Image (cartoon, rainbow, N blue to C red; front, side):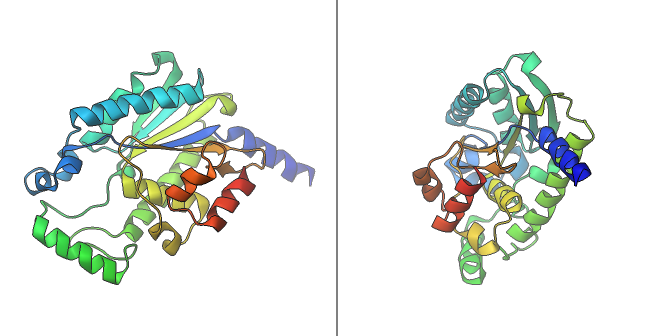
Length: 249
């Protein structure tokens, strides 16, 4: 028993204080879907409004973490990297202990250049079939995203345990993940073991919006330490899901 308790305390010390999920700022694709007919998804840029949203997100994150250290994981898409640039400007260089571009955090693949009329047909078909398991032709389903996100989370924990993320005091460490709307919902699904039905009810984060998971006294992460019931309900969490977040807190 003594050895198990020691192991649990060690694991707890290795857990970052917070995991902060951020959706990229408004992109040209959010402003007008026609962009995807000519520009590859990974090359779509932020708008000026999107840059301002990202800057505001950076200021908000800094106000939450104070002078604690931050480590960034970022999707390789242009709009997420541009979001990182704006967010990181809120932090002195000595507070950023690392940045890693992580391909598994990319947007769900909707295939190549998008035919807007065809995409509308596919989205209607997805509503009938079920959003989580519907795979776009030549693209991905949310279930496919779940598989790669699961691999990323396992790699993230390994990075922490193997001290690839170098910070001796885990209570001083914040992981910031900059990604996309669906990918963020899938990250939450994987971290909290939500079902496909539960994740289908979730509302995607707004551009530049953040979700803060904080490590609580019960040794678990919770959204309820930073976000109130009304906010969680707005995001699509059911009463039972909200109760679970409170118990975790």
